[in-house]
Length: 606
Image (cartoon, rainbow, N blue to C red; front, side):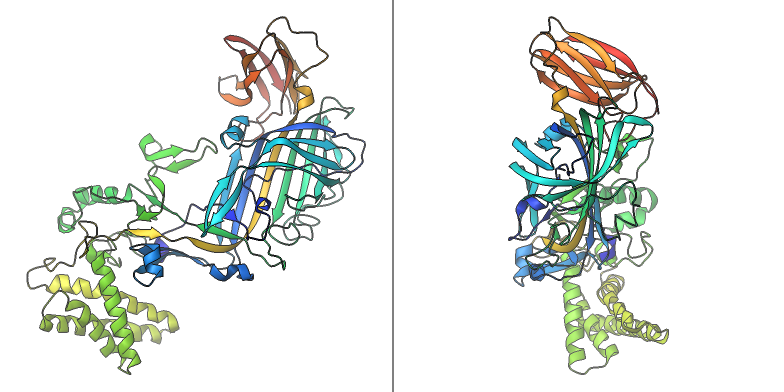
């Protein structure tokens, strides 16, 4: 049962109480590293896009902060609090081993619109002398936590720090672009990381995962011309892993203490109803025998459901993530409460006889919980008293069956179940199964309830075993589980790509006062990989600057907001909304000022 539910949705991480809250962020705003060098990076820059990838990997418990950690995602009935107080039941949804990847999460804030949606605004000053400052008015998202449940806040930030850099290289196909390694050496907020040698070094050998420089960064500066005097924009990449080297995810002693908080699990709202429809069409006998079919009185999602099977020809079966473009099954939800429903069992094949919950119509109900508790307690108690295994199994099954049938029938059922399970156990030991053979005893409650339904004096299914047709009503019915807050110890890797625009190019202060709305074109044209679109507006207005393909598909929005009267230059780096480089070809830019529009064509050559 545990393996049927796969955790797909992971909540962001928190840090220990004595670590600076701002160290671990959804968007670690990358600040420039520094070194005195000929190519200037000095200027004021606005963040206009950031693409962040997080990889969460389960680690060993090594810190004192890990005292309350867990390697299992669980759900409890009737509630987490009741189960924790010994008055309920906790069920494992997914168990992790050290080295397992919990999740890979992408945060694609691919343009200014998405940055604004998340409340992110970052303005920095970079100095050629090796210092930087985050200026007033900047904000960034970070996380806080309570009882392993994390939530996002977007505080203001303002600080100064130091950067280092290495000698880089001018791009052979673009004399206006220069790349170099960079790193942060002083910051009260952000991670520490190094500036690799991009010219003489090799990724994966001298820097990167598995090397002595796992935490590293680099910058590409796009200049207005090949003199490298005036930066037009920056592309900054940064990679860091939890540990002393980065200052992320460690306690005061340097031991790893990061964790992933899991207060919800993925669920869906469609699998139960789809199963109902399938049986009604393909197996009317089973459909009529199950207590819950033909009704839609389901109050919560199914935990672990995979959603609709995607049919490309049917848009009702899928959804498109607007930020990543991924195609996702319809019906998926993040659930804090839900049913346990499993019509497939361990082999993933539905209705072939290995389903643990088959006697209660594939739902985890009160009758199944009661049977499991009675069976395990009687079996364990008799073994502890020195009773042989087969007799203990028979008595455990007899105790479960006696809830539903008379003593003679329950004893018969007990003997059948005990003999069957014991024979299977002995056969398993004979093939060298070892301790894994103990798992056979888990079949006891299912096998007993199945025999009860077959041997019921009032006819199959008439003894009340199947209580799946309603939610729990203080006597029986489907159980609604609450997903427990669990802290899974992990080591996180952050890979961040950010894009910045020089504010010095936004307004041409030397241009004469604009007398009308006018577009001056883009320069250079043809270009690779950066061009600037220059325009003027004579009044305060709402301005939109958008790039389109020749087919009319929107490629990138450079600006969408109010501007004062003035002359402006907007830079495009040849990438689309998702941060991907677009192919060579002709593109159209369109500049709107209120209800006025100018457009022009530009050619990207690679």
